[in-house]
Image (cartoon, rainbow, N blue to C red; front, side, top):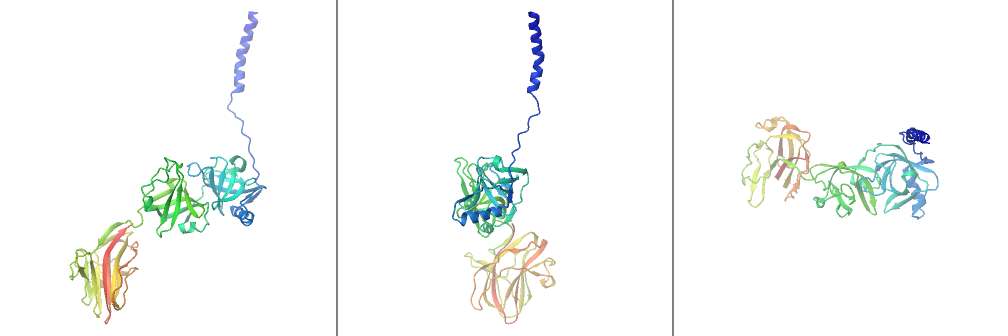
Amino acid sequence: MKKSAYIFILAAMFSLPVIFSSCIHNNFDEPPVNTIPEGTILTLDQVYQIYQDSVFSLNKLSYKFTEDYSVRAVVVMDDKSGNIYKSAYIQDLTKGINLHMLSSGGLYEGDSIIINLKGLVLSEYAGMKQLDSVSVIKNITKLATQRDKEPEIITIDQINTGLYLCKLVKLENVQFSDADLGSTYADAENLITMNKTLVDENGQQVIVRTSGYASFADNLIPEGRGSMIAVVSKFNADWQLFIRSTFEVNFDKRRFGEVDTVFYEGFSSCVNGTAIDFTGWNNIAVTGVLQWMGFNNLDDAQYTKIEGTGSESQTYLILPQQTLSDNKMSFRTRAGNLQGATLELVASTNYDGVSNPSTATWTVLPTNIATAPTTGYGSWTESGEVDLTSYNGNAYIAFRYNTQATQKGVFMLDDIIIYAE
């Protein structure tokens, strides 16, 4: 009796490894592949045409696909940053569109996908085209990952054309408005979505919209200017940009109007009625005897001026030697009683700084010089941005006054600035 029981226990013990080894193994069964039919492949441009023909033209609200149509596209924005929710933007070679998902996640930037349209609803929400009720499991087949699209470089004006709706774009030479500085992208504490204003050098504006749930909602608005990569969206009449990551906001340049001043002269130290004779300057009459004279009424009106009297003359007012490197320049002028007299801005790289300037080679620089009637005075005129970027190294810059016999006129000059952006 005891012997048989002992044999039974031994048999059971030896059988345990067999049982365990049959239950625990490293070769897991592969999950079943969910095959989604492709059917007829459409472009997003054709999808937009379906909306035009079957929704807009018929005054309907939406169109539901009932056949196996598909679109091949790349995901250009997902919802993992929290800036959009249960949503994604896709783009093919023709257009972009918003996907309104049944659940969050599952699609990622750079995913190359086929989306089966059967059962999906094509509509427009507040001006933005969308495909509604998209299931990653039932509607989407991933073909590849990390197939990121390059953004198209556009301007704010081009956004307003509507050609870039739901597309990935890059705007250059832009900055946030002065009113936005010191604030955050959104209210992360109270989870409130906020709009900020992006502007370009021409004053054109577009909204940058950020969710209070975005991972970067509490980041400060950058103070400089530069480039931004974002996806174009729309809400009613407002065009909007959605940022994917603050790493794609590269504002590493100075704001518009902010510069490093290399040289400035406002003639505040000039002596009224006395020829300009500042250190490093040259005030040389090549023809005639006219010179640039100081004007200082001790009441915040200081400048230099030259006035012809009807005789032939050519006079240079030469700035101190400049060491230039990607520089710009500006100044302002005023003219009066112009009867043939002219004023030019010129530059030379072979002038020696002391000799008669007529022995050097001078190049006329394009700029905006004031004009005036033959009797009376015009207004102070801004030169605009004078491009000096073609000069790299030492150079001389001068204002050259010219008259022929019987010609005359007055020119005033002030606020000369050479700067680097």
